[in-house]
Image (cartoon, rainbow, N blue to C red; front, top):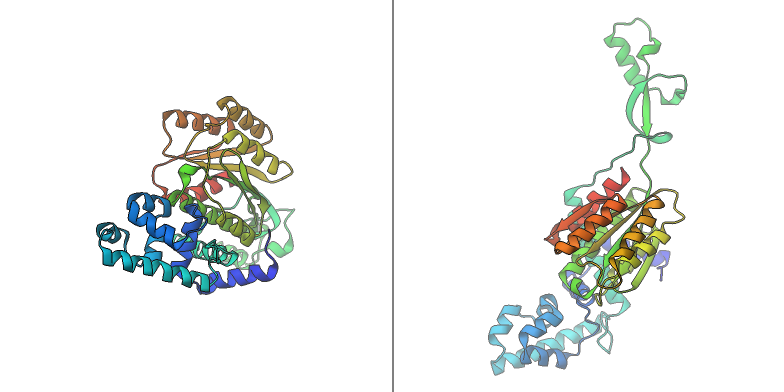
Length: 371
């Protein structure tokens, strides 16, 4: 549900001020990304003692570290020592109680709305700080607009508005040419350009293989894309999928709403690319702007037929919607399908082996789509 204006202002005020508990924010985020709906202290302790490796796969290192106050490697080495096990159990119980007292989890050990907000703020802070370091480009189209921004100069013409005359540039031209009076050819006017408008749908694979760090970095990329698009006065939409469409956020310029929907994504099930393309196409149907779909996935369709994927892509193309694909560790067959999708969809294929730069790739694709 879309948050109220008051809640939105409160959230972004928190993001800007930096007043969050970083460790607890990371813990809440990892609970979501590892699909840990809840954890009971005793069950978690038993899982760690019975089979540490399996427990690490289940909870992830961040959750284990924050709830035990020990580094994962240290736990594995000492898990059979009676005194250590006693301390481990005591730490888990104390940390869970603290999370409950701060209303991050409830009495049933389930993440609360406050916990989701904490995760959203922490995720957003980290990604925006990263983007701030990288800097933002702000490319413009060549289409002129009398209400655009003053970015360059051109020679005077009969359709020019007198307010667009650059006095400084005009006088400089006349002086350089040693004219005693300003001539028509000396007059320079502002050449105004406007930014390209685009509605873009970020399609995020939330199948089981995306669990953990892959999902976390994919969410961060979604923050980068939506923040940049909305900052440019464009709109960003979200489509979350596995074997079914799990979440739809229509193209919006409400960054807080986008962020709150993004943070709630959990990983499960298989993938269905054809349904993704069909749904994203329908979401862009009424848009009069440039229309673009970008799909991030680590698997090709294992539900439905490849033929359906190509047919859906062709329909999108016929409606002037371009499609790009960010493929994570795709096998040979997967690459072939992805290549065909972007060929039909007139987009780009990005083959990714490391997730750390997915946000940069998504921003690169955004600029490509705007051009």
